Amino acid sequence: MKFISIGKVLGAYTLDGQVKIKPNTSYPELFYDMEYLLLTENNEVKRSLKINNIKDHNGLFVAFLAGINNADDAAKLKGYSVSITEDMLPKAEDDEVYWFEIENLPVYNEEKKELGRLVDVLEAGSSDIFRIALNDGRYALISNNKNHVLEINTNEKFVKISEQGLVYEDL
Image (cartoon, rainbow, N blue to C red):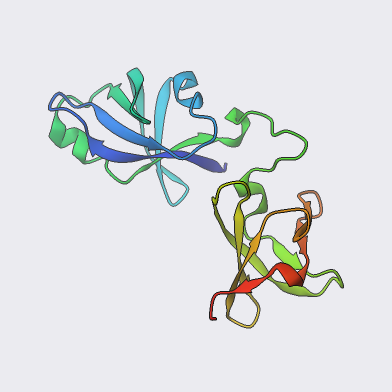
């Protein structure tokens, strides 16, 4: 089973064991739908804790969890990812994809020559920036817009780009 990270535990919030969580999802409302906080590390479940209460606090979430009754217990959860299963994600719009669907996909140019693999996405305002690990050992960046990223195919599992949009990191 694949787990999708939607946040990170930052540590204790209060002395009575509340934990603070930084969301890393476009759908923070998912936190309100969860009955259990699924804590993972390297896509492996480490703990599952019943959520007694969760609330939004200045862009973070603060949660009361069953069995976590003091700051020391809460501090031990720091660094874990808060995850959900794929089936809990809202359906993506027709022009959207989730990162886990395209992570590590091969990247091809217009002539279908494999250039490398998609290894990261950076949020940069109006369009995301994709980071590509090139086959020659270098890295390059490309803006995810229709002129540079020509096709994202999640069925056949590839990304096609225009090499004119590449910016090499070693410049």
